[in-house]
Length: 240
Image (cartoon, rainbow, N blue to C red; front, side, top):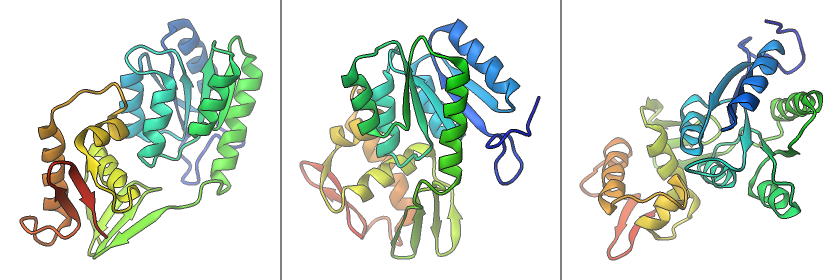
């Protein structure tokens, strides 16, 4: 495996991780073989839900994402990731060449858009360029502080009184969702859509359970919360 090319390795020397979300097995395999030949580590997912879960848990350096995917489409994945605070560059790869799809993808937060059929050399060049921009500080570090809690959105880490708090990927996404609402009350369905995407269907109790976990980990007194407030008849609100 070659690893001397610019942008292939992170500052700590580890090979950069690329997530390929593509349901066409031949395209996914071809991308994996060629990306690995360039020195990248590669993980693939063949549907939208698996791709979203891999993005949240593996935190890849870059995502190559098809639009037309089973279970959850690529544009929905971009929207959920950006709302959840994930800042890694995303290159949309799609046979849908309509300008509306390209514009929508870029406005939702994708880094680039490549139409199928594509030139492999061009795609690899765009991958290198996107990683160079990200590595060069193209994404501003984002953090929030309340009480003795520091939420580092860029690193997706939470500290309380200087101690790292063990929060799950979904707990972090809900925390970020509430913080970004800036005091606005959010219904449980609105939280579902912002964290899991518009096609997810869950019970209100699911959100209630996650809120209990956030209170137990981040509130001084979980029974008398100061930050994660219940809004009767609506849902929840974050108070800084």
